Length: 65
Image (cartoon, rainbow, N blue to C red; front, side, top):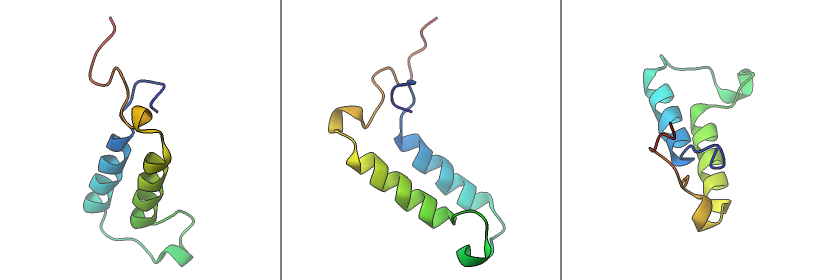
């Protein structure tokens, strides 16, 4: 995401919004997909594992037209 110009932190915000918008979901063990909480935790762990210079895209919010 970072190399493509996207702020990786926004992926966490996206999944928080998805969790709020959902009407609930089955227990993770009965689902074919990870729960929202698991996705958010995994994304945060992946972002924290990045070097600090890669935690926000250098051109985030700037259009190159």
